[in-house]
Length: 181
Image (tube, rainbow, N blue to C red; front, side):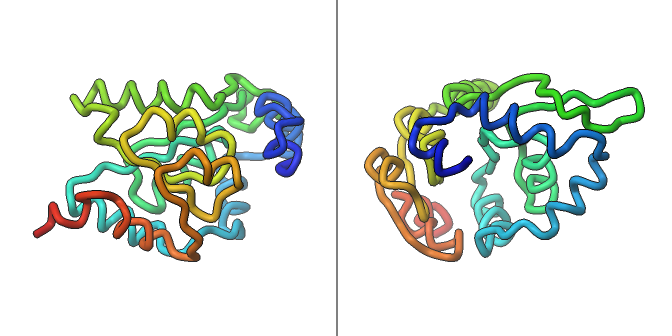
């Protein structure tokens, strides 16, 4: 499904609706345990802590499941997380039914809303992404990094990098590391 999504032949809405069935009847605790085995880019927590120490607030702006993004946010120190939301039943189990879709354009509104709350101009934001869903956000922020990304994301970003560690991005964001000096 991811290849079809990247190729533009599958919408995020269709992807979420199809994937939702996998979670039906699962508790959020069970999903959190499932996420223990998901391969992630190295250094996420370390990089977020380093950015937080520089006064940079980090958020997860994703079109994936918000419950999964929130787990990663809690584990790694992100301030907020977006994403598709799923209905839960009276017992707190996921129903497999999407409560609210979250599209590519919603990423921009999520970032814009957070920036308004914090009195930050969107031109002072940098985004890191890897796929088609990042294109509107890349266009809206001041600097963007396509990390291990599709050709489409690479073309839209300020720079493109291939690296197995998130920390590698920091040296490429203009002015970021000089603020600590």
